[in-house]
Length: 327
Image (cartoon, rainbow, N blue to C red; front, side, top):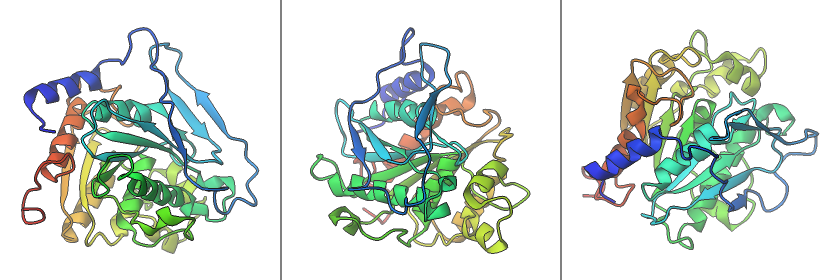
């Protein structure tokens, strides 16, 4: 795929225009269960899963999934696949995971550009899983491995699997990108392949777990009311080892009142200090949690085109990579 002017204009329209003027689009029919049996460490889990609809407008959904016990991938396949895969990890403050705004809505925009999209519905750390704060990361690592392990059979490139995470999902995607330690025992042959993405896109990410810039709700759900200094450091993205990490794309609005822009700024500094390839876009306005639907007429509405152009330069959409990596 070449990101020409016509493609860019089409993506802008897809990002800023409701998918339907009258009724929300149907959900993709294809889903993939993450685990061959029960998710690991669930012996003490007693929650009952639920999906809540917040939208009162028939033109769009705005759902969140809470108390997930069977994590899944929802697959959205483009009309003409370009070989690239994208794992989308929505936010929700680790209290729930949104389904549409940072999941299916974003997936439809990327699918319009030829990308095969997999939206993750992940387990939450406060629901009693034995892995605690690592339970969502278990699902993210397993999801990335499944996408990569299935790629050849799906006609996709196992070396072009990216992740996109938003808000708390950006924190989870960041851990998936930075950490090299597997958080669960291998379940089947899919767990032989790498769980690290080839590219990482982080939208207004929750990055730090430390005051004064922490998103307190995410920290509380992930680490409890009074986390230790060790836990705070271990789960702060800016404190992780980013040496050798794949290229990362950061996006944040400077008027974000929920997750301060310093989350991205500190992470940007850490990535640069580690010599990791990074591109960052900061917008004067946009607030928090805008996805692709809540920024019509605002500068940040161009972010999908910016992300795709950046990804194309890194060879994700099939074009030749810049620099010595693939020259």
